[in-house]
Image (cartoon, rainbow, N blue to C red; front, side, top):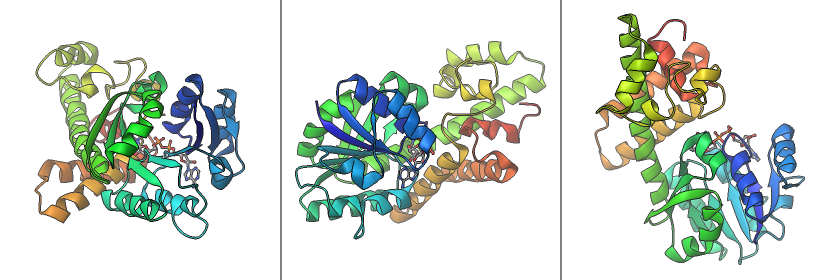
Length: 296
Ligand code: NAD
């Protein structure tokens, strides 16, 4: 059993913190949204007044925040958590952020003797709830070794992909492919529907054919195909369009850093930007199908 501070209890952090409680850890939580804290307390966590309060006496600090600026603000600066954490503490950031930000925070942590890994996740909100997330880890092997019992309470597959920041690079590769696949899957189903096909039959066929993917098997962008997918509840919950847009922007930056070509990744980024401007930024990213389909 570890004393864990969990900061950021949104669509992902909420169920992840609940799984840590279920595994027997003592979890102190903080989120800016009181309702998110209330839900975690209902699941057995203890409410903290702020992030520093949550982290006081913690052996492990986990953050699950939207973007780089939130993570840097949480840990760095005179009032950041790193200024007060004990050198024995282990920091796990599971947010998807810029690899350079992950490195910067980890270097600051190391300068204070605190071990930190970047451990972004894949598996969506369903994986977070089921405790079957994939963790994609960058950092020292020793720090990952210490993190394992905690990560195993929230996930099923754990990959050590390299040094600090490497977890974020690998996560961006995954999400760039996911963004393009979701957009083209929506286009394909919209094309079939425009020809009078049943979206359920079309999707079932695709799910066992060569275009099969997470989008056809688990999280179909067409309403009614998967009862538990965001598309079947008005595209609410899930992985926000604007979070996908953020990740594709980070992938574009990462590509520029090494002169890589990502033509489809850039195209996908533009599609999610268009969907955001159409007013769908807060919906699940599968709502990108709205750009090409009527009445979804
Ligand atoms: P979310 O917007 O639902 O949750 C983020 C939470 O952080 C919110 O509850 C917000 O109030 C809280 N927050 C923001 N600033 C804070 C601060 N300073 N202190 C405390 N709380 C603060 O986002 P999410 O979907 O849970 O995603 C979190 C991260 O995980 C993102 O980086 C995202 O890209 C990544 N991710 C999401 C999914 C998914 O399917 N939703 C999957 C994999 C990775």
